[in-house]
Amino acid sequence: MEKFEKLTSVAAPMDMINIDTDMVIPKQFLKTIKRSGLGKHLFHEMRYDEDGNEVEDFVLNQPAYRNAKILVAGDNFGCGSSREHAPWAILDFGIKCVISTSFADIFYNNCFKNGILPIKVTPEQLEDLMDDAKRGANATLTVDLENQTITGPDGGEVKFDIDPFKKKCLLEGLDDVGLTLQNEKKIDSFEDEKKNSMAWLNSAMTAAE
Image 1 (cartoon, helix red, strand yellow):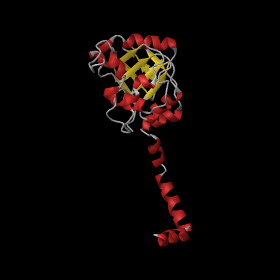
Image 2: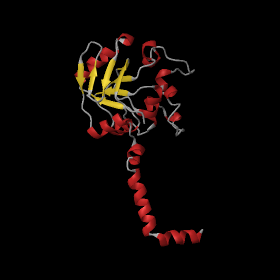
Image 3: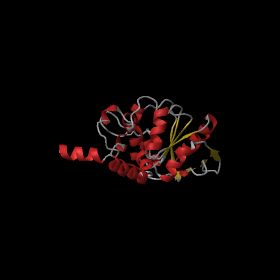
Image 4: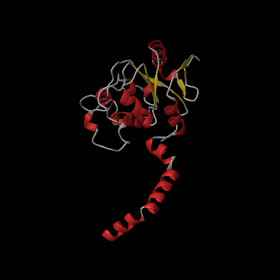
């Protein structure tokens, strides 16, 4: 998993509450188990009309936000079903940080497992950040995970809280597999010990073959 340390980008404003995972990635795109290729379907039903043409007014179709790596959204982001395809689609599009006042628990935890930083802020802070984001290409936000700050285009700073363990995993680029592999030597040692202490089982298995 790619490390998350500091990110500076235009932020796309989605001033909506209760953006659920079906809005993030509709059910018809859940057939794949690949993490790539889903970005083109992100917010599909809002980004495209019935003929597959882009909806000009949708924020991610606007020139200023096509390459946004930060999303500023309303309360209760990621609610609905627990599909992990939602963070896959967000990351594949290029968004690495989502800022909101609150997140659905499963979506929130899935973000960390996929290299996305979900940041919880107060309603007052979100209002300020949303205003910054609406300024378009002339305004960028800088998210500094190590120092747990969001710096606006005018130098204003927002502090945010994060679980220390989740912070460590993002900074070091560790997903569940990466965490397990940190103990690879201990795992190998345990397996060797079991093979030696249960040689009779190995012999029986060989004979059965």
